[in-house]
Image (cartoon, rainbow, N blue to C red; front, side):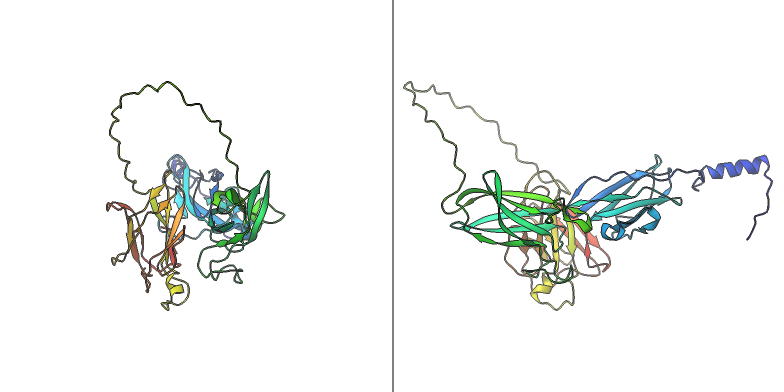
Length: 408
């Protein structure tokens, strides 16, 4: 064993060691406190989460992580692997600021187990659940008939779903099953898989009472109502829709109104007043709608089949608190291939729409470009989103093939 020779410091050299030990010259103090990890804000559906905590001022902080399924048994941060950086603008190793605060941005697509390391010391382990998100639609398709679609976020197969109709103070099951797709994920192909990359539970039901009806989609495991996927720490959620069903019987009875007596005295007329001019609504702000996912490299061989071409898609998310009509909006690639929302399309606050490159029938949540070839360049491209007035709202650029998609 190598033993360091004993050194006797004079005042000057001892002072130098003392200064070096304080971290003035960038080293981490031997007595630095272990980093801390704040409890992250709750995340609903696939998306970005901001992780924060404290460390020694100006110290290097590295995120360590595992998907909950693989990291749930970890008892200390050293048992987790350093996080892999997938996006250029989302580093997994950062420097704490002069106040000792650190911030790391990460994408959640399941529950996670996290910790950070700084100066050889580890924070506590944080288990972060992900609440399942979804878009739930119900439409009347005829007399006493409906169609429904539950599109979950993250796009994960085998989420258990129940569609129910309110019947007085209780709920009646209309249909139940699991989400399909994305194709090729989740092992065996889920039942009723339609071949696209959306995780959906969809179908139709007859024999529904006519009139105004309330439906809900419950995304939860049978016998374990707190979770949509316990093994992935994805918690349950419920979404509700009200729809007027064609046909007869069972609808909500409108409240009874008491007729009023017509007055015998003619009402006093008030001269018309001039209203002030209406202020036009403010144009959408930059970043109000963002590219949140671009799958530029379809799975498998690019064989130019429609299924392969539809493996390319763009996801646009409304990050604002207001609904935005995308009529006339466009996005294009660097080569000038352009997609335009030609008709009125409302993107609700917090919701997203998927635009697939190939051909198909537009739905409430998926649009089709109609191309017969792949558009996005795998090795690098730029997507630009503009309003109907030509204002640039967002752009997304990638410079290497990577994993076939980017979250911008």
